[in-house]
Image (tube, rainbow, N blue to C red; front, side):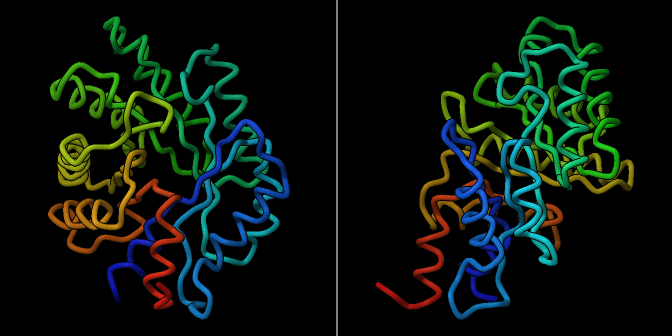
Length: 249
């Protein structure tokens, strides 16, 4: 399969705007299901929306292989009581979400309250029920590689199914160096525990060549890179990828 087609299959198409309405969600969901005219074999990996739009997204995605992701857990800053975070997660899953994206409390992490953070992540994992949990580390706010490695470990011990670099709301998004750290942690965890863990690079990936570099990086760690183990959060690339595939200039 051509690289552009592979990249489309790894995209989490996302809308998390302050003015989102159901019509926007429905249009983007339809695009996630059929992103390239004349290529019914292609679809995005997931559609990611606010929890209040889960039901609208589910109606459009029904019968397709596109997964429905919702940000929850007081995204993007994680500043809410745990009971509020878990209630939001349960509501999203109840409305049809099959993936939940939560951000860690950077306050807990940076203040050294690591046991509390691990327990909070575990509680949110429990609230997910059958849905997969993607844990966002917001690597741009962590002070160096060792801190990122430690945050990865806490997320994995809490039950993360995916490690994710960024919310898209921070100072900057993914970098290849930070993504490599997450891939190393996921590969090590998978090898030691026989429990597969994926990685999502999100934010700041603006060109097709950049996306190809992330795909090549993931291929160093996974024998086969698929949406089950690697995602790219770069919705803005879909148009360019579709143009490449349809041959339009």
